[in-house]
Image 1 (cartoon, rainbow, N blue to C red):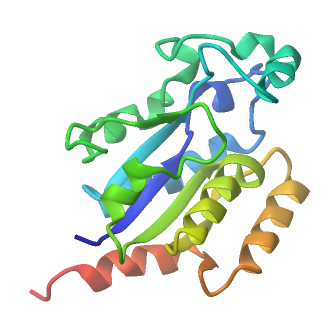
Image 2 (image 1 turned 180 degrees about the horizontal axis):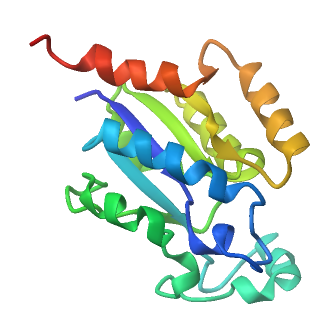
Image 3 (image 1 turned 90 degrees about the horizontal axis):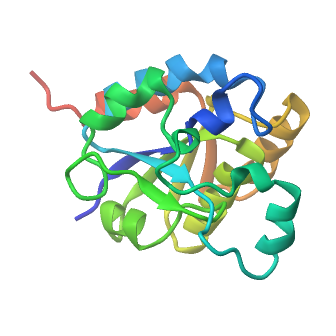
Length: 197
C-alpha cells in the first residue's frame, strides 16, 4: 500500500499557549491552514505529539535540565493537540484507524508508524511546528528513507521568522526528495486524487 499522507507535526498546547516557554510566536496563524489541509486530506492524516521521555538519557539529560517544566507525563494537558484542532485530529485515520497520534520523545517523528502508513512508494505532506526543529528533523529522516516529502510553507512556523525561512531554505536544498510547496500546491494533490464525477 502507498499513499499521500498529511503529517501534522506537534500542534500542541505547549507550542501554542500564551505564556508557554516553548510557544511558537506565529502558531495561531497556521491553525486555520492546518485545519483546511487536514479536512481536505482526511482520512489520510496523522497528528504527531512531542512528549518527554519518562527517564531522559544521554544528551537529553542536560536538555531537560534547561527545560525542567517539560518533564511531564504524556497525559499532561500541555501535550494535547490544541482545542482548535482536537476535533479534526479525532476524526482522521491516525496510525491504527482510531485517530491515534504518533507520540515520540524525539524531534523527528519518522519511524515505523509513519513508514507503515505511507508504504514503500508513499509521499508525505508535512505541516506544523516548528519548522526549524521537529518539522525539519522529520523531513530529513523521511528523505533518508527514500520518501518524497512536501513541506507546506504557509502551514508551518518556527521559533522566529528568520529561523523558519532558514529551515525552509535548507529543506529546499534536498530537492527533489524534499520540496517546499504552497497551500494551493498541496490542495491540488487532493483534487488530482479525486475521481472524476
